[in-house]
Amino acid sequence: EYRYFYHYPCNLDLEKMQLGANLLLGTHDFSAFATQPETNSCVRTVTSISLTQKQDKIVFQVEGNGFLRYMVRTIVGTLLEVGRGKIVPENISNILASGERSKAGATAPACGLTLLKVNY
Image (spheres, rainbow, N blue to C red):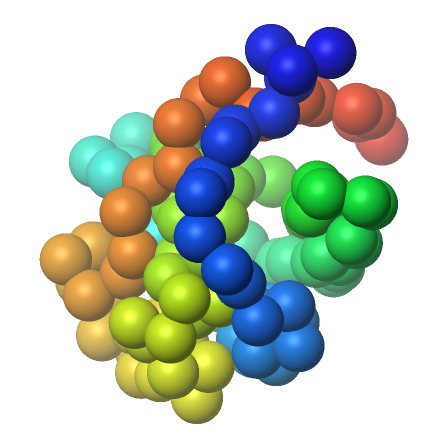
């Protein structure tokens, strides 16, 4: 089971993380959350980001109309930094507007990423 989780040994403020996640909802240019976009447009729509505490685990669920390379992993990495207090939730809007990858948090490792469903 643990191969499907990323161990992050820090105390996290889930409430602040959800505040930051809520600022990512909607249609935005997600250039700041992707690496080397392989498409002409980095505009995507994120319809839902939920963070659920399950015992000693936090489950992230991200839904949208499509994702850029490393976009979800960078969203998770950025929200982890919000949870640690390194990024204030309100700064998420500035990160989005900047379009600069260097302003967002670290890319979370792939070990905890699982594709659950694809809708058409």
